[in-house]
Amino acid sequence: MDEHESNTEPSTLEVTRRTVIETGATGLLLTTLPRAVLAAGPVGDNEPSPAKVELQINGHLHSLTLDPRTTLLDALREHLALTGSKKGCDHGQCGACTVLIEGRRINSCLTLAAMHDSQSITTIEGLAWGDDLHPLQAAFVAHDGFQCGYCTSGQICSAVGMLAESQQGMPSYVTEDLTQLAAELSDAEIRERMSGNICRCAAYPNIVAAIKQAAGMPT
Amino acid sequence: MKAFTYQRADSVMQAAAAAIKPGAKIIAGGTNLLDLMKLQVETPSQLIDINRLPLDKIEDTPERGLRIGAMVRNSDLAADPRVRQRYGVLSRALLAGASAQLRNKATTGGNLLQRTRCYYFYDVTKPCNKRSPGSGCTALAGFNRIHAILGTSDHCIATHPSDMAVAMRALDAKVETVNRQGETMVIPIAEFHRLPGTTPEIETSLKPGEIITAVTLPPPPPGVQVYRKVRDRASYAFALVSVAAIVDSTRGRIRSARLAFGGLAHKPWRVAQAEQQLANAPATAATFNTAANAVLEGARGFGGNDFKIPLTRRTLQSVLAEMTRA
Image (tube, rainbow over all chains, first blue to last red; front, top):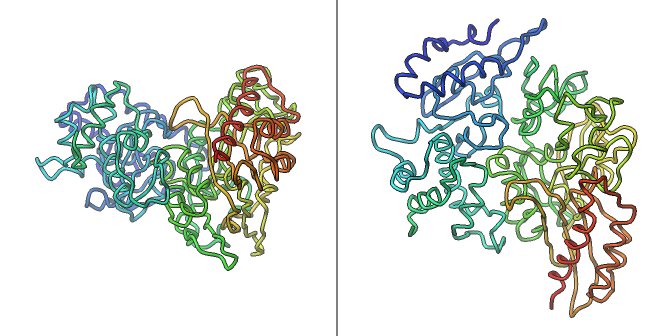
């Protein structure tokens, strides 16, 4: 069975045209699609049975039947047309695919969709309320926290998770006193905690400023 | 990625029974396994998902130590107040590894089982005795800047990439496992990871169907705990050399010391003789140098990684000087 035939959602090709128009990301989609299809690899003789998965994404329940190889990122992008989460390296090194699972940030390229059955997932598409941007989205706009924008959705989702971790008192490598259960978010702390998100345009100073604004700190 | 069947385990015993089948592989956090599967370095025919098993607790032990469930995420372990207060070296080592996203997913058991980052192990077009036994080692005469200087063999010069395991080695952790018969085994971490020898594809003492359920820590030894990691970037990079050090000293005199090293060998490296040199010795440059000699006994570079020998010496001297400063 072809991976896409087994999908209970609208087929990838149908969704593509609409998504291209909606996002205006023609170049990105055209270059990403063939690679994503190839990523599933050749189908062997002993083809495994598809996996049924229910994902609660941005408050909506989606039932999918997927090739077990489908990463969470590919499920979002290729099966649900949620192309806000980006495929950069596809090996957990760049952070462009960062989403929140049960409120915690992870690399969606390095996990299988099937592993997240019945879990709650938040992507960049789920942060804004209609036209009201999430405070981090607004702060990234205000501080020019990007140039090309490809890493931005990952940066913002990561920053949402990072501020929550910080509020919960989780330490980082640069936290001086580990026994102090609430560390102050200095620039060094923000940079260390965000080191899993690479920005090829090097918008880092503005990203740090945006995060500080969203955290209610002087920028 | 090669095709595989996916199964979610409902109990440890079910996972152990499934894992004994040829081609079956346990998946926990998956941050290393899926990376390798995408490159077809790992090609399991069946994945057994243990993410829903109740192995995610950190409990106090009667001996005043800690028992860490195999599925405790690296970020949760690093942030646990008991770990931060009593096992700072472990918290620091965990926080020195990977990125926050990866630490949120990576587990205690999976971290112990992660594979080497040797470039040639990752490149399926190149010979590698670890990936394809008997094919040869490309790293011996290749780019070997990140490779081992201790405990190597003619078959493999790969290093173990974990920071967490280095701290656990200094803390004398024990790895708790369950086999298919339901028997519990306790393996000292020193015996858990193996040197490459002639079988670099065998990395741990685990048998087929044997599953890590927990890691236990004895009460912390007296003294200050430090994890120093030397790497190419200040964050999100593997260690060239790392040291987990626990040193008890007073007024310029060392009472006792424990030292474990990462980035140097196929397993976290610890040398009893170096620790004996430091015990009841004055905290002087000469003492530190003698200890470094013991650590580096038999060290051998392969060209690109020759620098690791002086780097290890200087890192150790720096760490010991800092820790014994009055």
